[in-house]
Length: 154
Image 1 (spheres, one colour):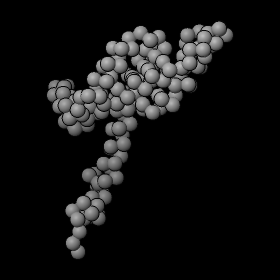
Image 2 (tube, rainbow, N blue to C red; image 1 turned 180 degrees about the horizontal axis):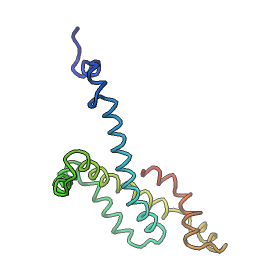
Image 3 (cartoon, helix red, strand yellow; image 1 turned 90 degrees about the horizontal axis):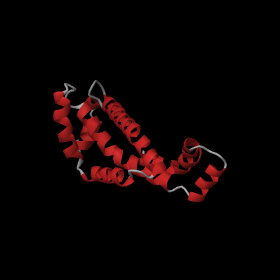
Image 4 (spheres, rainbow, N blue to C red; image 1 turned 30 degrees about the vertical axis):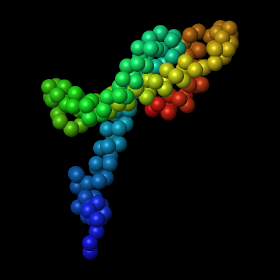
């Protein structure tokens, strides 16, 4: 039976079991992705909320975020590899997680900032006129209205 290389590889039962099997590698990939996005969210969400709410530092933060989009992922991995080797973290998992964190920060930061900054000024004025504090305005007004964009960034 003649088959294409990829098809034969997927049909081989040896690739579906053991420590190097497809299910284990799929779980590792999911864990690495979730960990990277979680770390990036812990970094980028507070910054995006702060600059979106106050408007201070927006140009700098968005410029750095957009610069991060321009750097190829292989270059980020090449930068992360010597750092993790120097810290004794190994060769495969942590350099990849660090590279993915740096790749995940720009869309989370940008979308959070744009979502919070894009809330209608009249809505904010009405909330402040009702006596809401700045923290309440951010939590009860800006964050729920910006949620679709924040989730899109995540």
